[in-house]
Length: 102
Image (cartoon, rainbow, N blue to C red):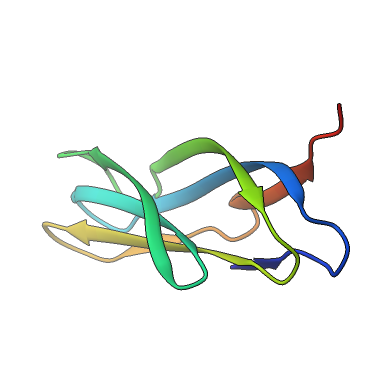
């Protein structure tokens, strides 16, 4: 997922991120990584060590970033399993940014 700051819209932004992982078997752990202009600036990880097929786990974080026009932010997600496959439910995952105005 990618967000680019529009020209002339630099400032402080609130980023809200959620990755919804759906278990296809026994889950091990999941993580999301937050990048600014190609450099990792945050990572959130959860250890699940459980899960039956169909169980959903959400990884969430928020971040306030000072952004310049044309800065771009990316969100990557990963999940590891003991058995089966883990998938990401894109209809339940979120990556949003709101400009903060004072």
